[in-house]
Image 1: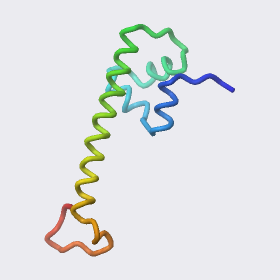
Image 2 (image 1 turned 45 degrees about the vertical axis):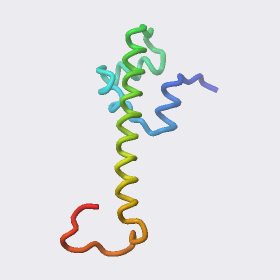
Image 3 (image 1 turned 135 degrees about the horizontal axis):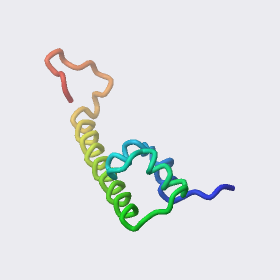
Length: 90
């Protein structure tokens, strides 16, 4: 069985895209892929960048989920009801 980095396992399990995480880390997707696959040595600075990127992704995801939850509770009990014409947002 091939060895997998913790980062790759996290990304695959939680559907974190390589380009999205790379952007948050301030590196190219190719560079992050090489780091993730251990094709290039990882520096402490790179590890810290990736950690900050994952933390930013978690924060963004939490905010998105909070928004979904709030919208859901506003329409709970009428999810399958047609929206009024003047209602364009939840």
